[in-house]
Image 1 (tube, one colour):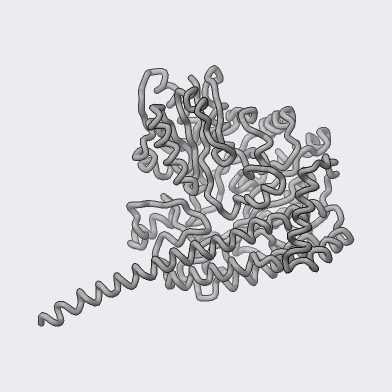
Image 2 (cartoon, helix red, strand yellow; image 1 turned 135 degrees about the vertical axis):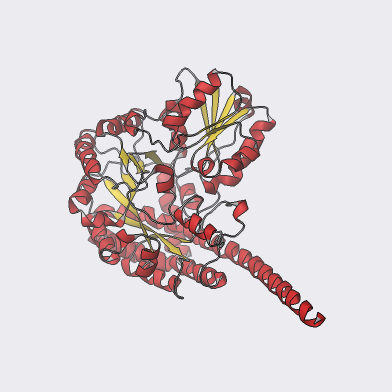
Length: 532
C-alpha cells in the first residue's frame, strides 16, 4: 500500500511566526507528530510519503504515486483540510482522516468526501482501519468506544519522513490527558482526565532516534499538561538527565504545564537540569471569579503572579495563555489582563476571545441554554481572529473592543521589548552547558536583520541596544535565548494588525446584522399595534 500523508496549512495565527521563521530560513515551527506516529503504527511493509502543506505543495508525482491519502488536522486547519480531501477525491483517491478535528466533527469530513474515519486515538482505531482495508472495504468509521490506549506500546514516530531543515523545533510526546476539569478545554474530551505516560526508556529511544538522524535544535514536548502525572514525569526526568549529559546536551526542551508547577521546586529543578528552557502556562485570567466559574480551580490556590515569578527565577521562561469573555466577567477584563502581563513581564502572552469547542462541558452547557451561535454550523477555524461563537453575558461588542485594544497594547514594540528584557533579567541562568552552535550565513543575516529593524529603524532603537547590553552584563548566559524572543516581536508586530483588522470587520458585520434584527423585531411588534 502506497500511503500519502498530508498535513493541512495553518492560517496565520499567534503561533505561526512567519516573520520570525523567515529570519532563519524555516518554513514551520513544528512538524506533524500525529501523522508520523500514524506511519509508525501502520504496517511497515507499506510505503509512506509525507507532505506538510505548511512547508510545500503536493507534487503531481506524489498524487499519482498514492493509493491512499491520510490526513490529520486540528480545528484551526479546517479550511485546507476540507480542500485537500476534495482534491484527493477529485483525483480518484481513497481518503482516510483522523486527528482532533475529525474526531470532534466527523460529519464535516464525511461531507467533504472522506471514505474512512479513523477517529479517537490511533493505537486502537488504526488496526481496525488496516483490517478493513485487508477485507477490501472501501469505507468505514472506526471508533474506540471510550477505550484509551496504553501509550507504552506506541512505537517510535517515523521522524525519517520529515524534511528536517523546514522546521524550527521538533516534537515528541510523553503523556496524554490532564487531571483537571476546565469547562472550556477539549483535551479532557479527547484524551481523558487520567494522564497516561510512556515509560522513560521509550522516550529516550525517541530522542536517540532524533539524535541519530542529526537533529540538534529545540524539541517541544507537546503534552497538553506535561506535569499531569508528576510521579512519572520525575522518573523520566531522572533518566533523561544523564542521557543529556552523555550526549553533550544536544536538545533544548519546551513544554506546556499547569500553573501548579510552581508548587514543586524539585520538579522545576529537574526540568532545568534536563535543559528545559520554557513552559507555557494556561493562566486564562487574573479574575478569580471567572476561574472558579470555568472550573479552573488549580489557578485559584496560590498567587498567579508569585507562581510566574518562581517558575521564571528557577530558569524556565514563561509563556502564558489568556482568555476574555467568560460568563459573569466584569467590564475592563482586557485592562486587567494587560496589567497582569505587565506586572509579571510575560513576553509571550497568547490572548484570545473565549470559544466553545465541540463536545466540551462549555459547549454542552451553552447549547442547553440556547446560547450557541448557529450550532448546526458547529465551528469555523478558531484562532485569535474570530469572534466568539456564543452569546456572552455582556455585550459582544464590548468584549471585542476590549480584546482589540488589549492585544494592540500587549504587542506594541516598546512594551513587548520592555517585558522581554525584564523577564530575562529575572530568568534563572541555565544549569546545562550551552552547545557550541555553528556560525553560518543564515544566523549572521538573522542577527543583522534583527539589529537593523529593532535597533535602528523602529522606535525601539535606543532601548534595544541598552537592554542588550543589560542582558550581557547581568544575565549573560541567556543572551542568545533573549535575542530569539526579541525576534518573535517581528511576528507580533504584524499579527496585532491582522487581529485588529479582522475582528473589526467581523464586528461591523455583527452589529449590522444585530441592527437589522432589532429593526425587524420592532416592525413585527408595530404591525399588531397598528392593526388593533
